[in-house]
Picture (cartoon, rainbow, N blue to C red):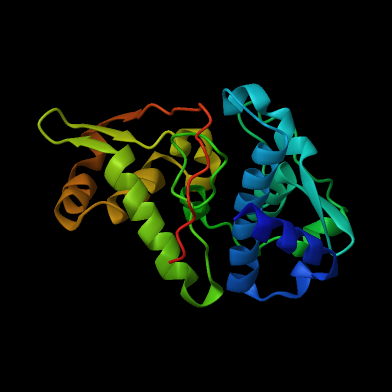
Length: 221
């Protein structure tokens, strides 16, 4: 698999992602991010915890279309609308006049957080995303993640959402919007119950394991 990633990296200098249409551009950047994480962690022998290796995400980069794109630039600058970088949110990744912003997606889709894999054990499963089925793939990935990383206690009127929704809370909106998003990605009956009882629920978040996971096979689906 890493040999394929090396071949991919060698062709990227000729790519012009700013010319890609909407879903093709979104799929391109999700796949590039996930591939660059895998390649970097392998080549640099990144070990331990993701949170102890955050500098890697600013340093690891590929030349694409003659410009440098790091992991941070791809995730926060291009996929998240140049939002401030968690957890401290002190700065934006790119300056307003940075020409790389031309390659950003037009609209932030919060489902990307259930497609991007930063190498941690609690990250979503790796997939290869395709523009022609991107909406369905993102929906499936989000529902799968909620099935294992969200907890709804109807008797106790409590819900614990995936911690990614706390970490990137700005991408999911206020409490009401976040709970609506959650309801949409739960099974039908729990989702309806959540919408009906949202105002009275105690809200929390599940734990997140930042330890680095051994590279898993990519699912081509």
